[in-house]
Length: 414
Image: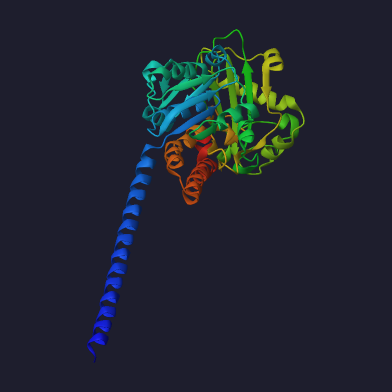
């Protein structure tokens, strides 16, 4: 081969090798750059999530709203808390009605910083009795001791204009509706008002006696089991109850606001059928009056016929005890970057009063801390759906547990 051709081919071969080396070098550098970028982004995302904070907005300063506040205040992801309440401070702390916390609620409240030694009330049989106003006053008095700034907006109704103010908050927001079954904040924020009703497989009736001349001092509850009622004077001798499935009675509340509840497992005896359709209100009035007079505490006077006529409010007949639960318990508003959920009676409510209603609401709050953490960290659609699914699933579990054992624990057990 001529020298000139040999040189030309050798030159082409060297140029090709140089090009290949350059391509390989470029590829390696690009790969390193992509790896470095992915590592840096992953690290940044982790740090960003660890630095992320959320503003918690609570509507309602009842026992559940204030307990939600305490739960949020202990979560390190919460930067501040805003509390909306229609009532003023005096109206809140003067609420005279009694609440009774069971052992599980007491333990839960202790984990969020509640010191029961500083709350006026008394313990009995692993329960704590106090007035709603006393509990609210205690929580309001310790807000300045929390590690998170709290902004109280008392005498402020939550409406569409208020929600627009919340939507302007620059950080992510979690809005918790705690304004009861008659509140509108959940609907204003976008939650559906659809509820599902579940039978607790029991019938019940309730009565309330208001005595303004008595002090609103918390009292112990009185439970009586396997009661039978003689209605033979009204319906003949065949209207009797099976003593194996008799009625269960509970007396509770303060001495000023006294309550009575009757419950019986769902079965169709002649007596139960009769009391479900009875038209004569005097029958249920007399049942509640006689129950109170026979099982009242030693320090209480009997109910007279006149007092029963004027002051005793009661169910005219037996009704089926049902739990209503909100179908949609959590949503995410992408444009406003707001999570919305509800607690207490805004999430689930019972058409029956046992004196232990607040404990059902407390069960729902046990999942709130984890939901806050998940809401802060949710930066993908999958994460957002997981957070909402967790809250909805937890709410469903609370409802199912109560339907299964709630009435048995609050009424049928000793």
